[in-house]
Amino acid sequence: MKEISKQTDTGPAFRMVHFESQPHANILLNGLNSLRARGQLLDVTLIAGGREFKAHRAVLAACSDYFRAMFTDAMRESRQPEICLNGVSAQGLRCLLEYAYTSRLVLSLANIQDVLATANHVGLTPVVEACSSYLQDQLDLENCIDVATLAETYSLRRLRKRVYRFICTNLHQFAETAEFQRLSPHQLEHLLACDFPVNCPEGDVLSFVLNWVAWDVRERLSQARKLLSYICFSEIPASRLAQLWDSPVLQCLFSRRIPPHLSGIGGLPPPSLVNTRGMELVLLKVGGFGLSGVTNEITYYLPSAGRWKYLTSIPHVEQCNFGTAVLGNELYVVGGCFNQSLHQENVHPFGFRYNALTNEWSTMAPMHWERCRFALCVARGHLYAIGGAGEVVSDADATEDGEIRCERYEPHSDTWVPITPLPGARTQHAGASWGPYLFISGGLSSDLVLSSLLRYDTRSDVWEVMPPMSIPRTDHCMVVYGDRLLVCGGWHEDIATGARVLAESVEAYDIRNNSWSSVTAVPTPRYHAGVAVLGSWLYTVGGFHSDTTFDRASGIVERFDLDGVLGWEEVESYPQDVWEHVCCTLFVPRCRDDLDVIPDKTLM
Image (cartoon, rainbow, N blue to C red; front, side, top):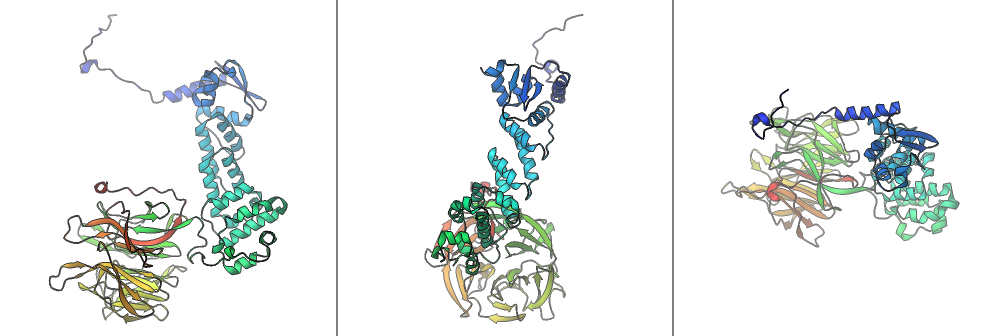
């Protein structure tokens, strides 16, 4: 046979071909397992729990750093034909050998502890992670203490966090089981200190701790003071604290009188929350527009971290000009409009509700009338949809007098009920509530910018006209602080030129005195900005600077001290240019692991 000539030509006809067989890894693994089953080429015997297991050193060393060091370093075991693994069970080793030779593993509640202990002992990380995931999926009130103990024993941080969050989420139910008394002092202390949301009032948390101590008071009383230091007594109503004060544990620690620092005065949780444990009031930015167009993204500013983070997205086709409100610490997004083509705006009546504790959205009954550019307000446990525009203005949208139909949402029955219409047609107005009253300010009516203020009494279903603002405004915001309505942002038309003029002033309506006053001037006047009150600060986020500025969109964030001490200050900007969004506040779990908002390339 003639030998193929060896040439160095690198032309197309002489190129090398790289061959790779995808099934080769499985073929190799199956071959090694077949050798093990036949007892061929085995070179080491592992002894665990009194049982012998024969294996190949190369397979063990390839899977585990523990065995690799044992067989390749100058260790005694590297020369021994038999190796005794102390502290390893026979069942655990059998399962791990099955995994090493097949890549398969069967986990159950019967073997999980043995497999986890063995995998941790020999450093088989993929199996440890598989065990951790399995335990997370099997969590319940009966096994959570055992799972917590395993997580702490083997330093499984993610599993430990998941277990304690599960316990806190179900604390009321868990504390009523016998398992609660099995908590070690260290575990109960961590449970109180881990800053996860709980599903019961702080008074109940105190009661659970007292019951735990009383279960074995001789052994546990010494732990009581330390455990009680994690109780937020200021969130417990005085009547509830007085009721609990008869506990023998508290009597032993503090005698008969309630110490002043445990008086329970001044820090009760807001009505919308059962407990503020693990929760933080954040500033939300809901929807709006950015450089890439309309967005359904909802982000939030976490004060304790000083960063903007992603929260969730509205579960609807990308939309804008919807109504937004917070009721019972749930975010409602109702109505709005979206484009199916370049020239068609579709207005819809549908609504969605977001629960920050469960991180879940749910649907709600649609409004009777589709609407966008309206006000969605909260009063006396109900939502109110006021004014706005429909896709086509029809007789069904307005009364004979041109009044825009309004409606009230009842959460318990998931129904909308018509209420007295808003006097006169208007869109792009602002709304806010105080006590039983709704207030509607400004807006557009037949292209006329309004300055009027209307008040609706939710008890009598009656509208009345109040003193107007000092200037007309539309595309503005109105918020409540104490007994005042604060109106910020927006624009009106110059009478002479018809040009759009930005409203620079922040004015306040004193609800009790029925009068307006000027509060301050916004350092950077904007419209289509988001405005909300967080603590004692009035925040303005993003918006448009003017119609004449080329780069008129902004991510600038400014805030004003409503207590009149610090004035205006500029804080870290929103990472992106945003406008036509809505801002509000919501309590969210501090333990969320959300991504930071990615800055626009133009801002980097």
